[in-house]
Image 1: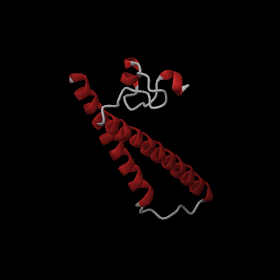
Image 2: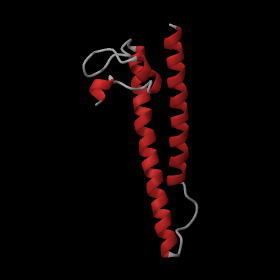
Image 3: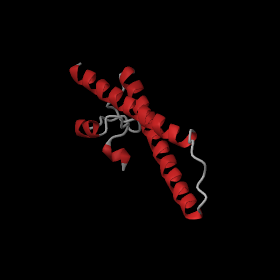
Image 4: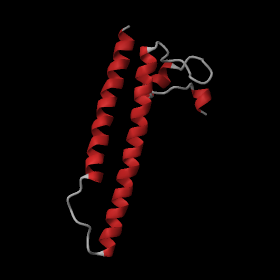
Length: 108
């Protein structure tokens, strides 16, 4: 049970970190107070920065969904079982990726 408690704590900590990251990025994307730059080169640079922020936000939301799903599997007593083949997920893989839902063979 101690392992489950540690795992839950790790997942909750990661969820909190991801929620904060997504919130900060969302604030940067949607609550900009600066007018667009007048210079075309600066506008291009700003657009590239916005694209990077959008990609980071999308990545954060995707990982957040994986963490939420892992917490749901933990609550259902299904964490550590591959969602594809039903086999056990190696403890080393779970240590590295506690939100994974697949064994290494199915992940390939």
